[in-house]
Each structure stands twice: as C-alpha cells, then as structure tokens.
Image (cartoon, rainbow, N blue to C red):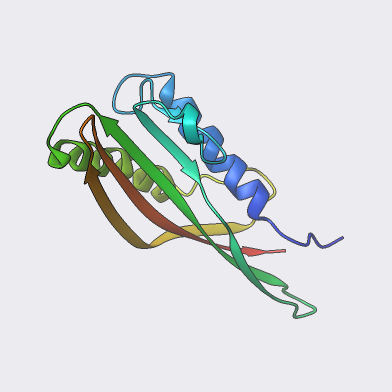
Length: 143
C-alpha cells in the first residue's frame, strides 16, 4: 500500500538524529530539540520544526512527494549583543546542515533532503538578545 506522506517519518528521523547529538559533546550538548515550538518553555538554545507544505504527484508507477518544512534554530542570551546569538545560531544551523548532508533517513523511506533557503532574524530587548535562524528543508520521497 502506498503511503499518503513520508513527511512525518522524515521529521521524526531528523528529530531523532539531532536529539542523539544533544547527548554528546559540543556543539549540540544541552540544546533543546523539540518537534514543535517549545514557546514559553524554550531554553537558551533550541531547535524545532514548523509548518510543513507538501505536493504529491500520483504517477501510478512512481508516486512522489515533495515537502518543505522549516527547521528553526533559536538562541536566547542575556548578552546585549545580537551578533553573539547570531554566531551561535549559525553554528547550530551548521550542525543541522551536516546532519542533513549525511542523508541518513529511517529505514524504509526512499527519500532525500536538502536545505533550499535560510533566513536569519535577530533582535534585542532590555533583558536579552534573540536570534531565530530558519533553515527551509525540502524532502523528496517516493511514496
């Protein structure tokens, strides 16, 4: 039977790969990795996913899906300099990129993924600096 989508499997696979890296040495040690935005429970450094958009082609022989979802890397720091949070967010984003570059998807998922765009947004309040680095991930898979 053909699956309707592989996005859930790909996202859970990436989440597991990143979560495993939090148990090791830098650079992901102690980084919060969540499936969705931790919102008010966000720690100083977190990685989470956003809304997925998907299109499918239902050729009888090779049904395919192309899905895009953001991987958010958020860094919050009491420092007064947003360039500090930007540098750290980019370093964590590089780990996400390297993880995707290994193209290690769960068994049974015939897919590949790539980063198709990035966006970097920083700000400062009286109490903290905050950076949100967005990596738009595209997953292409046979269903």
